[in-house]
Amino acid sequence: MCALTRGAVLRARKKLSMCAHPMSSIRHGSACAPLLYFRYIGISIRSQMQYRASFLMMSLGMFLITATEILSIWALFSRFGSLRGWRLEEVALFYGIVSTAFAIAESVSRGFDLFDRMIRTGGFDRLLLRPRSTAFQVAAGDWQLMRVGRLAVGLIALTWAGLKLDVRWFPGGLALAALAILCAACLFYGLFVLQATLTFWTVEGIEIANCVTYGGNETGQYPLSIYRPWFRKFFVFVVPLACVTYFPVLAILGREDAALGTPRWFHAAAPLIGIAFLLVSLRVWQFGVRHYRSTGS
Image 1 (cartoon, rainbow, N blue to C red):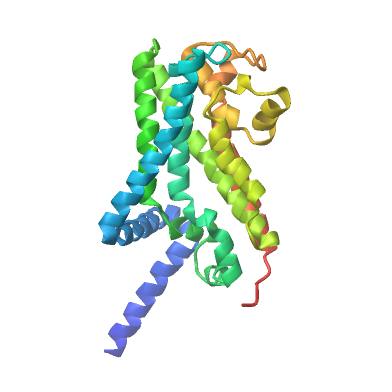
Image 2: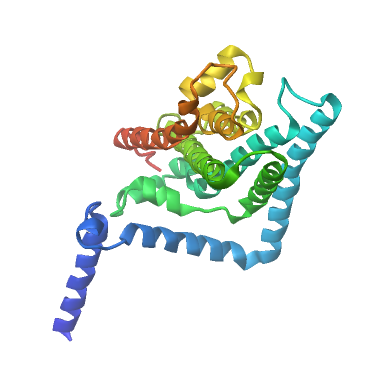
Protein backbone atom coordinates (compact mmCIF):
# COMPACT_ATOMS: atom_id res chain seq x y z
CA MET A 1 0.00 0.00 0.00
CA CYS A 2 2.83 2.37 0.92
CA ALA A 3 4.68 1.61 -2.33
CA LEU A 4 1.57 2.23 -4.39
CA THR A 5 0.89 5.47 -2.57
CA ARG A 6 4.45 6.64 -3.01
CA GLY A 7 4.31 5.80 -6.73
CA ALA A 8 1.07 7.74 -7.15
CA VAL A 9 2.57 10.74 -5.40
CA LEU A 10 5.66 10.66 -7.63
CA ARG A 11 3.51 10.46 -10.77
CA ALA A 12 1.39 13.39 -9.58
CA ARG A 13 4.49 15.47 -8.87
CA LYS A 14 5.86 14.68 -12.34
CA LYS A 15 2.63 15.81 -14.01
CA LEU A 16 2.57 18.97 -11.91
CA SER A 17 6.16 19.82 -12.79
CA MET A 18 5.41 19.28 -16.49
CA CYS A 19 2.53 21.75 -16.36
CA ALA A 20 4.37 24.23 -14.16
CA HIS A 21 7.30 24.83 -16.50
CA PRO A 22 6.42 27.00 -19.53
CA MET A 23 8.50 24.87 -21.95
CA SER A 24 7.50 21.48 -20.57
CA SER A 25 4.40 21.16 -22.73
CA ILE A 26 6.58 21.57 -25.82
CA ARG A 27 9.25 19.11 -24.70
CA HIS A 28 6.82 16.39 -23.66
CA GLY A 29 4.28 16.91 -26.43
CA SER A 30 1.64 17.87 -23.87
CA ALA A 31 -1.01 20.56 -24.19
CA CYS A 32 -1.40 21.28 -20.47
CA ALA A 33 -2.09 25.00 -20.73
CA PRO A 34 -4.76 24.89 -23.48
CA LEU A 35 -6.51 21.92 -21.87
CA LEU A 36 -6.47 23.57 -18.47
CA TYR A 37 -7.74 26.84 -19.94
CA PHE A 38 -10.67 25.16 -21.67
CA ARG A 39 -11.44 23.25 -18.49
CA TYR A 40 -11.68 26.56 -16.62
CA ILE A 41 -13.92 27.94 -19.36
CA GLY A 42 -16.12 24.84 -19.21
CA ILE A 43 -16.54 25.24 -15.45
CA SER A 44 -17.45 28.91 -15.88
CA ILE A 45 -20.03 28.15 -18.58
CA ARG A 46 -21.60 25.34 -16.55
CA SER A 47 -21.89 27.59 -13.51
CA GLN A 48 -23.63 30.28 -15.57
CA MET A 49 -25.99 27.76 -17.13
CA GLN A 50 -27.18 26.65 -13.70
CA TYR A 51 -29.56 29.62 -13.86
CA ARG A 52 -30.70 29.45 -17.46
CA ALA A 53 -33.58 31.89 -17.11
CA SER A 54 -31.21 34.51 -15.71
CA PHE A 55 -28.71 33.82 -18.50
CA LEU A 56 -31.38 34.16 -21.20
CA MET A 57 -32.74 37.40 -19.77
CA MET A 58 -29.28 38.95 -19.39
CA SER A 59 -28.28 37.88 -22.91
CA LEU A 60 -31.53 39.29 -24.31
CA GLY A 61 -31.00 42.50 -22.37
CA MET A 62 -27.49 42.81 -23.77
CA PHE A 63 -28.87 42.18 -27.27
CA LEU A 64 -31.55 44.89 -26.93
CA ILE A 65 -29.18 47.45 -25.40
CA THR A 66 -26.63 46.90 -28.15
CA ALA A 67 -29.34 46.95 -30.83
CA THR A 68 -30.19 50.53 -29.83
CA GLU A 69 -26.76 51.54 -31.15
CA ILE A 70 -27.72 50.21 -34.58
CA LEU A 71 -31.00 52.12 -34.42
CA SER A 72 -29.20 55.36 -33.56
CA ILE A 73 -26.85 54.91 -36.53
CA TRP A 74 -29.83 54.17 -38.81
CA ALA A 75 -31.63 57.27 -37.53
CA LEU A 76 -28.55 59.40 -38.23
CA PHE A 77 -28.29 58.21 -41.83
CA SER A 78 -32.01 58.34 -42.46
CA ARG A 79 -31.86 62.04 -41.58
CA PHE A 80 -28.64 63.08 -43.34
CA GLY A 81 -28.14 60.35 -45.97
CA SER A 82 -24.35 60.12 -45.60
CA LEU A 83 -21.59 61.06 -43.19
CA ARG A 84 -18.72 62.85 -44.90
CA GLY A 85 -19.00 60.59 -47.92
CA TRP A 86 -19.62 57.37 -45.99
CA ARG A 87 -22.83 55.42 -46.59
CA LEU A 88 -24.86 53.48 -44.02
CA GLU A 89 -23.74 50.03 -45.20
CA GLU A 90 -20.08 51.11 -45.02
CA VAL A 91 -20.47 52.35 -41.46
CA ALA A 92 -22.34 49.13 -40.66
CA LEU A 93 -19.20 47.27 -41.72
CA PHE A 94 -17.19 49.30 -39.21
CA TYR A 95 -19.80 48.62 -36.55
CA GLY A 96 -19.95 44.89 -37.27
CA ILE A 97 -16.18 44.40 -37.05
CA VAL A 98 -15.59 46.42 -33.90
CA SER A 99 -18.70 45.21 -32.07
CA THR A 100 -17.97 41.55 -32.82
CA ALA A 101 -14.34 41.95 -31.74
CA PHE A 102 -15.27 43.82 -28.56
CA ALA A 103 -17.83 41.15 -27.61
CA ILE A 104 -15.18 38.44 -27.95
CA ALA A 105 -12.58 40.41 -25.98
CA GLU A 106 -15.04 41.39 -23.27
CA SER A 107 -16.13 37.76 -22.84
CA VAL A 108 -12.68 36.25 -22.43
CA SER A 109 -11.02 39.12 -20.52
CA ARG A 110 -13.58 39.48 -17.75
CA GLY A 111 -11.00 38.46 -15.17
CA PHE A 112 -8.83 41.46 -16.06
CA ASP A 113 -11.84 43.79 -16.16
CA LEU A 114 -12.68 42.91 -12.54
CA PHE A 115 -9.08 42.56 -11.38
CA ASP A 116 -9.24 45.57 -9.02
CA ARG A 117 -11.53 43.58 -6.73
CA MET A 118 -8.94 40.83 -6.47
CA ILE A 119 -6.29 43.38 -5.52
CA ARG A 120 -8.46 44.98 -2.84
CA THR A 121 -9.37 41.67 -1.21
CA GLY A 122 -5.86 40.24 -1.39
CA GLY A 123 -6.96 37.40 -3.65
CA PHE A 124 -4.09 38.01 -6.03
CA ASP A 125 -1.65 36.75 -3.39
CA ARG A 126 -3.10 33.25 -3.78
CA LEU A 127 -2.38 33.29 -7.53
CA LEU A 128 1.30 34.00 -6.86
CA LEU A 129 1.58 30.70 -4.97
CA ARG A 130 0.27 28.53 -7.80
CA PRO A 131 2.45 26.88 -10.49
CA ARG A 132 0.94 28.88 -13.34
CA SER A 133 1.50 32.36 -14.70
CA THR A 134 -0.67 35.03 -13.11
CA ALA A 135 -1.90 36.26 -16.50
CA PHE A 136 -3.13 32.75 -17.35
CA GLN A 137 -4.94 32.39 -14.03
CA VAL A 138 -6.64 35.78 -14.26
CA ALA A 139 -7.62 35.17 -17.89
CA ALA A 140 -9.13 31.78 -17.08
CA GLY A 141 -10.81 32.94 -13.90
CA ASP A 142 -14.00 34.24 -15.50
CA TRP A 143 -15.75 34.03 -18.86
CA GLN A 144 -18.95 35.93 -19.62
CA LEU A 145 -21.26 33.89 -21.83
CA MET A 146 -23.99 36.54 -21.78
CA ARG A 147 -21.91 38.71 -24.13
CA VAL A 148 -23.38 36.53 -26.85
CA GLY A 149 -26.09 39.20 -27.11
CA ARG A 150 -23.57 41.84 -28.21
CA LEU A 151 -21.87 39.31 -30.45
CA ALA A 152 -25.15 38.52 -32.21
CA VAL A 153 -25.80 42.20 -32.98
CA GLY A 154 -22.30 42.62 -34.38
CA LEU A 155 -22.64 39.56 -36.61
CA ILE A 156 -26.05 40.73 -37.86
CA ALA A 157 -24.63 44.14 -38.78
CA LEU A 158 -21.62 42.52 -40.43
CA THR A 159 -23.79 40.15 -42.46
CA TRP A 160 -26.13 42.93 -43.57
CA ALA A 161 -23.23 45.15 -44.63
CA GLY A 162 -21.65 42.27 -46.54
CA LEU A 163 -24.85 41.68 -48.50
CA LYS A 164 -25.33 45.36 -49.31
CA LEU A 165 -21.78 46.24 -50.29
CA ASP A 166 -20.48 45.52 -53.78
CA VAL A 167 -17.25 43.92 -52.60
CA ARG A 168 -15.33 40.82 -53.67
CA TRP A 169 -15.51 38.93 -50.41
CA PHE A 170 -13.97 35.67 -51.60
CA PRO A 171 -11.30 34.98 -50.73
CA GLY A 172 -9.45 38.18 -49.82
CA GLY A 173 -12.22 40.35 -48.38
CA LEU A 174 -13.59 37.69 -46.06
CA ALA A 175 -10.12 36.71 -44.86
CA LEU A 176 -9.22 40.32 -44.15
CA ALA A 177 -12.47 40.91 -42.25
CA ALA A 178 -11.80 37.81 -40.12
CA LEU A 179 -8.22 38.98 -39.49
CA ALA A 180 -9.47 42.44 -38.50
CA ILE A 181 -11.93 40.93 -35.99
CA LEU A 182 -9.26 38.69 -34.49
CA CYS A 183 -6.68 41.47 -34.20
CA ALA A 184 -9.23 43.99 -32.91
CA ALA A 185 -10.18 41.47 -30.19
CA CYS A 186 -6.47 41.19 -29.32
CA LEU A 187 -6.18 44.97 -29.08
CA PHE A 188 -9.21 45.28 -26.80
CA TYR A 189 -7.88 42.39 -24.72
CA GLY A 190 -4.59 44.25 -24.38
CA LEU A 191 -6.46 47.35 -23.21
CA PHE A 192 -8.17 45.32 -20.49
CA VAL A 193 -4.78 43.91 -19.46
CA LEU A 194 -3.31 47.42 -19.20
CA GLN A 195 -6.35 48.57 -17.26
CA ALA A 196 -5.80 45.73 -14.78
CA THR A 197 -2.07 46.48 -14.57
CA LEU A 198 -2.79 50.01 -13.37
CA THR A 199 -4.39 48.60 -10.23
CA PHE A 200 -0.99 47.39 -9.01
CA TRP A 201 -0.28 51.04 -8.22
CA THR A 202 -3.75 52.58 -7.86
CA VAL A 203 -5.56 49.62 -6.15
CA GLU A 204 -8.84 50.99 -7.50
CA GLY A 205 -9.59 50.86 -11.19
CA ILE A 206 -9.54 54.34 -12.74
CA GLU A 207 -12.31 55.53 -15.01
CA ILE A 208 -9.94 57.02 -17.57
CA ALA A 209 -9.05 53.46 -18.57
CA ASN A 210 -12.73 52.80 -19.32
CA CYS A 211 -12.70 55.84 -21.60
CA VAL A 212 -10.15 54.05 -23.75
CA THR A 213 -11.64 50.54 -23.62
CA TYR A 214 -15.38 51.12 -23.81
CA GLY A 215 -14.90 54.52 -25.42
CA GLY A 216 -12.67 52.91 -28.02
CA ASN A 217 -15.50 50.55 -28.89
CA GLU A 218 -17.76 53.54 -29.57
CA THR A 219 -15.05 55.34 -31.54
CA GLY A 220 -14.30 52.38 -33.79
CA GLN A 221 -17.90 52.19 -34.95
CA TYR A 222 -17.33 55.15 -37.27
CA PRO A 223 -14.64 55.97 -39.87
CA LEU A 224 -11.55 57.66 -38.46
CA SER A 225 -11.75 60.40 -41.11
CA ILE A 226 -14.78 62.04 -39.44
CA TYR A 227 -12.80 62.93 -36.31
CA ARG A 228 -10.42 65.82 -35.62
CA PRO A 229 -6.71 65.42 -36.52
CA TRP A 230 -5.44 65.14 -32.93
CA PHE A 231 -8.07 62.50 -32.19
CA ARG A 232 -7.05 60.49 -35.26
CA LYS A 233 -3.40 60.54 -34.23
CA PHE A 234 -4.25 59.29 -30.74
CA PHE A 235 -6.07 56.24 -32.09
CA VAL A 236 -3.30 55.50 -34.58
CA PHE A 237 -0.07 56.10 -32.64
CA VAL A 238 -1.08 55.75 -28.96
CA VAL A 239 -3.98 53.29 -29.01
CA PRO A 240 -3.80 51.79 -32.52
CA LEU A 241 -7.53 51.20 -32.85
CA ALA A 242 -7.55 52.54 -36.41
CA CYS A 243 -5.08 49.83 -37.42
CA VAL A 244 -7.60 47.07 -36.67
CA THR A 245 -10.77 48.82 -37.89
CA TYR A 246 -10.30 51.81 -40.17
CA PHE A 247 -7.39 50.63 -42.34
CA PRO A 248 -8.64 47.06 -43.01
CA VAL A 249 -12.08 48.41 -43.93
CA LEU A 250 -10.40 50.76 -46.40
CA ALA A 251 -8.66 47.72 -47.92
CA ILE A 252 -11.92 45.76 -48.11
CA LEU A 253 -13.77 48.65 -49.76
CA GLY A 254 -10.84 49.59 -52.00
CA ARG A 255 -10.87 53.20 -50.81
CA GLU A 256 -7.98 55.63 -50.40
CA ASP A 257 -7.00 57.03 -47.02
CA ALA A 258 -8.11 60.65 -47.29
CA ALA A 259 -7.41 61.32 -43.60
CA LEU A 260 -3.77 60.25 -43.23
CA GLY A 261 -2.65 59.36 -46.76
CA THR A 262 -1.30 55.93 -45.84
CA PRO A 263 -0.40 53.49 -48.67
CA ARG A 264 -2.68 50.64 -49.67
CA TRP A 265 -0.24 47.88 -48.72
CA PHE A 266 -0.34 49.16 -45.14
CA HIS A 267 -4.14 48.87 -44.96
CA ALA A 268 -4.05 45.08 -45.30
CA ALA A 269 -1.07 44.60 -42.95
CA ALA A 270 -2.19 47.06 -40.25
CA PRO A 271 -4.40 44.61 -38.27
CA LEU A 272 -1.31 42.67 -37.16
CA ILE A 273 -0.48 45.64 -34.94
CA GLY A 274 -3.34 44.51 -32.71
CA ILE A 275 -1.51 41.27 -31.91
CA ALA A 276 1.71 43.19 -31.23
CA PHE A 277 -0.22 45.51 -28.90
CA LEU A 278 -1.46 42.53 -26.88
CA LEU A 279 2.07 41.11 -26.57
CA VAL A 280 3.37 44.46 -25.33
CA SER A 281 0.47 44.69 -22.86
CA LEU A 282 1.39 41.30 -21.40
CA ARG A 283 4.98 42.51 -20.98
CA VAL A 284 3.69 45.53 -19.07
CA TRP A 285 1.60 43.16 -16.96
CA GLN A 286 4.72 41.16 -16.05
CA PHE A 287 6.43 44.40 -15.04
CA GLY A 288 3.48 45.22 -12.76
CA VAL A 289 3.55 41.75 -11.19
CA ARG A 290 7.25 42.10 -10.38
CA HIS A 291 6.56 45.38 -8.58
CA TYR A 292 3.43 44.21 -6.80
CA ARG A 293 3.25 44.66 -3.03
CA SER A 294 0.66 42.72 -1.08
CA THR A 295 -2.32 44.60 0.37
CA GLY A 296 -1.70 42.90 3.71
CA SER A 297 -5.36 41.97 4.07
